[in-house]
Length: 304
Ligand SMILES: Nc1ncnc2c1ncn2[C@@H]1O[C@H](COP(=O)(O)OP(=O)(O)O)[C@@H](O)[C@H]1O
Ligand SMILES: O=P(O)(O)OC[C@H]1O[C@](O)(COP(=O)(O)O)[C@@H](O)[C@@H]1O
Image (tube, rainbow, N blue to C red):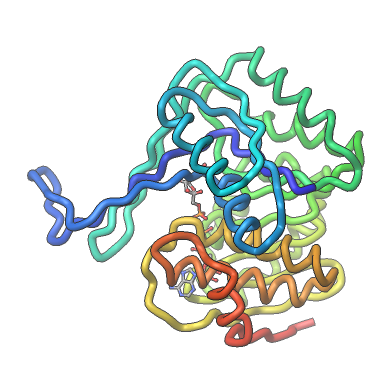
């Protein structure tokens, strides 16, 4: 079974404003809300791709109840731990360009974290855990490290999609997959990365540091896959971007879904890119139909 862990879920509030003016009263052209947070998006896309998963994490208040009910209505298993404060609301402002404001999130007590560690201890060697997204300020930067140590003891494969220190610290524990975007990769190595070719040497360093498979996404500029076996670049399909929130999470879900079915990394990478673009070209997260329509439009260039 695939378990997704969203330590800091969100309700994503997506507002479209035409002619936005900072410091003035603006009225929305459209608005929508969805359950969000990286692991939750991974579970929702896996469901679209016919792969069951169970969503874990902390939820609180009316926003937490909304997320739990939304997932259960989509027939996604959940094992959330309830916390006292409200789950955060993240604002996604569409004004011709996309501006995001991601909130800090509720306080997680030591007792809550102990309950989570107990859940992770129960995972088996044929399970996969996806640790995705930020952690609230009340938890230390070693939070993911503590959890992957448990995975290592149990022989549970794990995937990490997180920024900076959270990601760096887990590399020695050999994550099965990591998926930074090019900005996050640049932050890790204190450099600027803007084209796929520049990704390759840094991606290889992540493999040396312990990752088994690395996908680096560069939005419309493509994506790069690096593993010990081979490295390749993907050109993404062309289309109209409607809402790219969750595109990165869709890549993680797409890779896991296709790898589970085919055990072929190149196919899984191609499916991953198709899933990311299918979400970017949709108002909501991708559907299987859209992913399979785009799959053949993803061009893969092997470079090693
Ligand atoms: N403008 C776009 N055109 C086509 N595909 C896109 C576009 N923006 C995002 N995608 C797809 O979504 C994936 C993830 O996007 P990216 O913005 O790099 O990730 P993240 O959401 O993690 O920051 C890309 O690899 C690509 O497949
Ligand atoms: O945990 P973080 O890093 O604040 O990110 C949370 C946000 O990321 C998302 O999961 C979207 O992620 P991606 O666009 O990177 O796929 C949103 O649903 C959510 O608001």
